[in-house]
Amino acid sequence: MIALLLVLTLQTTKVPDAAQFVGAPQSTPLQGSQLDTRTIEIAGQLRCPVCQGLSVGDSPSAMAMNMKEQVRELLARGYTREQILAYFEQSYGEFVLLKPKFRGVDSLVWLLPLIALAIGGALVVMKMRKLERPVATTPSDAGDEYVNRVRQLVEKE
Amino acid sequence: MNRTVLVIGILITAAIVALFAFSFGRDPQHINSPLVGRVAPRFALRAVGTGEVIDIESLRGKPVVLNFWATWCMPCHAEHPILQQAARALGSDVQFVGVVFGDTEENIQAFIRERGEAYPTLLDDKGKTSIAYGVGGVPETFFIDRNGKIVAKYEGPLSFEMLQTYVRKVLS
Image 1 (spheres, each protein chain N blue to C red):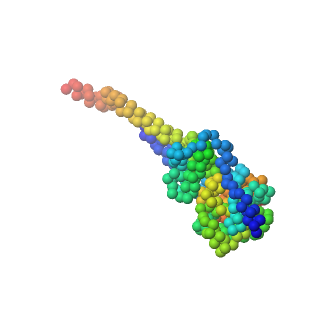
Image 2 (image 1 turned 60 degrees about the vertical axis):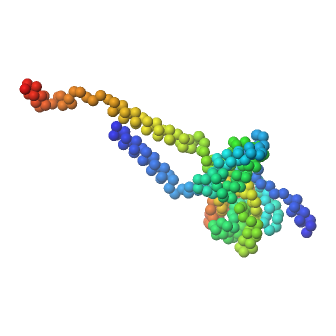
Image 3 (image 1 turned 90 degrees about the vertical axis):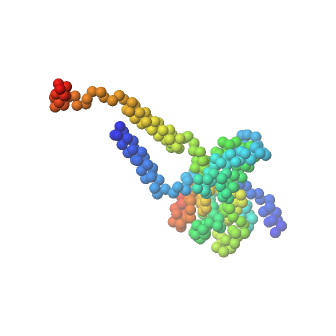
């Protein structure tokens, strides 16, 4: 019985490490207020996977709190912002990033508003140019024989 | 000018209709796991009840059904007997492993006492294993082949038919 307990005690648990995903830390470990500030900043860039449109930093869910704690732990170990975001992205996919990357179909998120703005601007310019055109001074019915005769009669009188 | 406006209007409407048509029938909560096709992240967690530490690496050579669940999750209650039945039926051909997160050992033990346990249930204390596997909600199940590679991920409670389909995938 004692031997069994000893074996169980000696067995150590292990959780998946960020190094499996993004390698060794590439910066210096943070602590104190710098650690708090960076944790809030990075948690604010991650989407809470169990919430509707909330960041990990804003969500009170247990999952978000675990994720925020992990961000803090990784910063304290010297992982950079890019490495931490890459770690979560490799687990959850790009969905977890609140700010989509300028890549592939996602680039439309950035490009479409600009394209819409350009089209709108072009339409406004076209309309303004049309309004600025001088009004025709010659009568549009100059070629009408009946109107010409009437005009001649009026001028004679 | 009116014709230009009409064409632009038609294009915008067509784009919106196409977007809706593409999105209808898709679950907005569903995320394709980037882990599919990759080696399962390594972990070693303590089993509830026995205290034995189970290392996912030690299960290499045998297909693994890795089920993330919790006692507070109602769909997990419905899925539990299906997984237990399948684990008993498949015996040593496939290793089933449960990982519980956001829960207490007492709740899990009470659940297991009441409903039975055909395979080890591990406690993911601070949710780090669930995070590494990109778990967004429970239940979620990963199907891992003999080489330790994730073949598929299923979100939501498994039916017996779905479970059979995925198990065939890891066995092939």
